[in-house]
Length: 332
Image 1 (tube, rainbow, N blue to C red):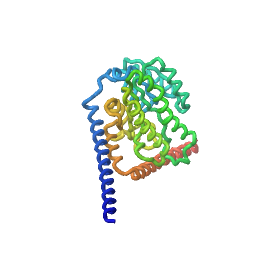
Image 2: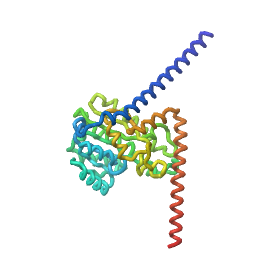
Image 3: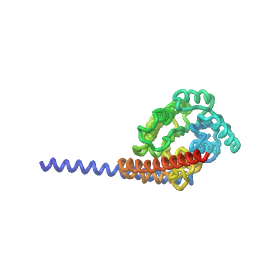
C-alpha cells in the first residue's frame, strides 16, 4: 500500500513539474517574441523594395479603406509594392486609391466586394486580379459588434455577417491565393485577428470566437505549407484607435497602448517575415504577455467586466444623444 501511495505521489509531482516547466517555457517564449517584436523594427528595418523582391510585386488588402487595413496598404505602398484595394464602398476605394497614387509611384487596382455575400465576393476578387501576381495577401476585413451586447440582443443578420466576414472571407481568400504562391514557392499571407482571441469574451462572444478561429486556422495553415516557401503570419492586435472601437472613448483615444492605425501598421509591416506570431505592435506585445499570464477563467471575467464598462459608456452616450434630440424637437 505504501508503495502505491509513493508511486501516486511521484506521478502527481512529475505531472506538476512538467506542467510548471511547460508553463514557464511558454511564457519565456512569449517574452522572447515580445523582445523580438520590439527590437526587430528598430534594428532590422525592411528596405524599400525588399518585400516585393521577397514575395512578389502586388499586395492585396481586404478592408483597405478604413483603420488598420488602410494604413497597412499605405505602408506597403511606401515600401514599393503595387496595391490592390478591396472594400465594399466604391466611393472610399476611389478616394483611397487617389490618396495612395498621389504619394507613391506605384500601381493600384480597386475591387469592390462585400464579403457578407460569402463565396460570391471571393469569386469577384479572384476574377478582377486573375492576371496579377499577388505576393502578399492581407486578410484584414472584419466585422465587430456595434457595442458590447448579450447574444440575445445581437440581430441574427449581424451574427451571420460576423461569421461570414471574419471566418468565411479569411478562409476562402487564403484558399484562393495560396495555390499560386505554392507554385511560385514564395508569397506571404497575413491574417489579422484580435487580442480578443486570448479568452472567451462575454458581450462580444461571437466576435471573439471568430478571432480564435483565425488564430487556429492560421497556425494550422502554416504547418500545412511550411515547406513551400510561404510566410503565413498571424497578427493579434489589442485596442487600436479605429472606428471599430468607437463605442467607448476609453479605447477610441490614441495613447501609448492604443496606437493610431498608422503607428500600428508601421510596426506590423516591419515584423512581416520576422515573426510568424505577433501582436503587431511593441506595446501590444507587452500587453499580450501580461494579459496571458493569469488563467483563462480570470481573463474571461476581466474581459466581461471591461465590456460591461464599455457597454455602459455606449448606452450613456446614446441616452444623452436621444435627450438632446428630444429637446431640439420640442424647441422646433
